[in-house]
Image (cartoon, rainbow, N blue to C red; front, side):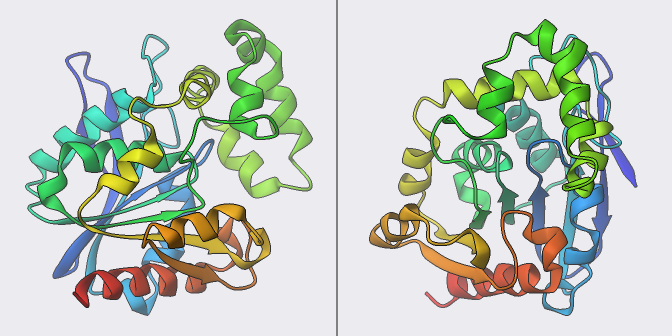
Amino acid sequence: MKEYIVDNENNKIRYHDFPGKDTPILFIHGLGCAGSFDYPEVAAQTDLIEHRRILIDLLGSGFSDKPDNYLYSIKEHADYLYKFVQDLKLNKVIIFAHSLGGPIALELADKCRDKVETIILSEANLDKSSEGSYSYEFGTCEEADFVNGVFDEVVNSNSIENSMWSATLSVCSSTAISRISKAAVAGGDPSWRDILYSLQCKRTVIFGEESLPDDDKTELERQRINIEIVKSAGHSMAWENPKGLAEAIKKGILYAREF
């Protein structure tokens, strides 16, 4: 694992950087997750083995630093990742992102359009969070209440039925989870959906078979966005079918290279 200083306060993100000669893939994880937890098995699949694969833990998550005085907004995450891409001298990059990592990926792609070979999103937030989602539940809760009680309740209540997410959530900063969730509720300006539609690179959105039907699939297809399906998986496809997710990512890469 490597580390990268993101600001003048010496805060660091930590990441895996697996070698490969083909275009680097930057993996951006979702809410309460971590690249170091979610993506090693995906990155190890034969379909992706020729690519350089960079698995980050966002600030506030996984093995990365967790400062309480950080804003943890979508924009702030995208800003330090833009600097990270520049400093790693990634002249071309494939951006993959899951769930609430999607808005971060889209704002990053908007900042470095000339570097993005393709963007691949798996069940990503394209609009501000709505009622019924974890990010809406967390983001509409007072930060002090969330940090001092709700966070631990969520970790404990998911420890049996959703034990993988409970495990990775438990090592996140409760402050970071609260603040990024509030950013998700507020939405982007321009919206993350509008950024996706405006990107000139080829775009792919991945759904888990068990998450369908989804009304957004038809709308995305209407916008000429490539759709891939991971069989025998729902929203947590990296854990449920890592081989299938790697295959879907590879199909998205090949789709971008067909034109």
